[in-house]
Length: 227
Length: 249
Image (cartoon, rainbow over all chains, first blue to last red; front, side, top):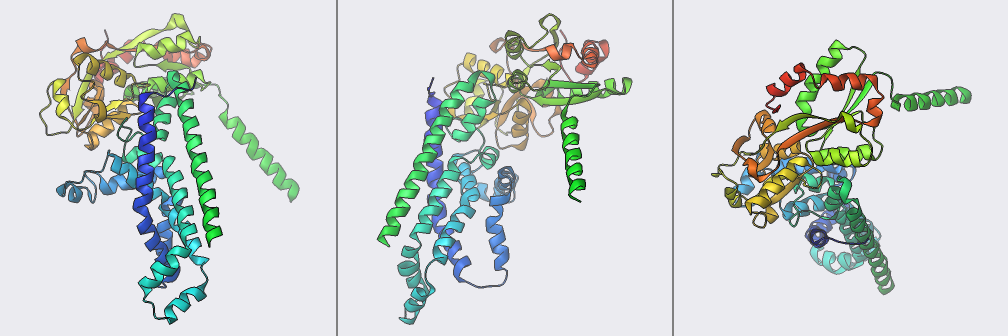
């Protein structure tokens, strides 16, 4: 009853590859943005916060469509990217972009919470001792916000594993290239004769989510103990 | 005040539930995506001639439609783009088997907006991305996959196939230009604005595209559905099919 086709193994490894790449690529940007939003004051900050949180409330298909309008052959940035030889639509890179955009608010939110819980006195102490802002950033803020970073990363990773709407629009359903687990399940479930195959992949999906969440809890606890 | 709100809530709930039930004069159509314009045309004409008939149209991939009907979705008339899905519902005893007829025929083409020279199946190997309906549920994809296998290029095209959920999405991919081209029906390609027919798939590579139509068991009890079913077999309907490029024999 539990059987996986060859394309299913492709889907699983592809899902993992896309989720890892999206999370790693978003981490530096997410950390920088969280820093800006937590510690800097400037006019229009609310607007930035709204824009960052937009992918969280927009339907993922809308996010996918906007990405298509932006990066497609006839899109705003499309011709520019093509002149440099970068083709994103219907490649695994587009799947990474879709997952990154959709998971970005989750990442920033978690890192922000981690940063906000750092005692302001520690940062002030670092400043009074003469450390420039980047020194404070890497030696005080970064280590103390690790819990937020880990929480954000695992949330984003889990979200990437389940990303469907934006992915199918901008990366398409290409077995072996962009067909992640949700896309494979969707294709199975659309057909009357392939439903049992869908069940197997669903089980895998559940196991993956459980593992990620379990690791998230364990690592989070270990870090708190060290602090 | 509380009493009034409670009555208002109950009224709204009743309205919601009643709105969902099938009223007299409603015909539920489950139609293969490529027949969209034909059925829109025919149902509009029929509605004008028979006021009071309301059509609920569900266009999609024939396999997906068959699955919906099997799982209890309302459907009075089912028109599939290949024999497989009609036979599937017949085997599940959901169709009025004696009344199944052939509605139309079609041919498979490869259409796209690529600048590359594509004139035969073998030329497809040169392309980077090819749109195809998902062979698990879209007849156009099943026909295309058979043609690909018979032409011996299945392995070469392995990572180039972009799966679409029905033939119209396939056409949309071809139109948008993100793929080099896609396997669609001739009738779909005739509707295209940017994509043009690059070549016709040789008929010896795939079985003839046949659209069986039938009344479901529920549809056989629906007078308006029966009337429309007869209308679909009339000369008027044949004329509309011809207008859109479908084969009749």
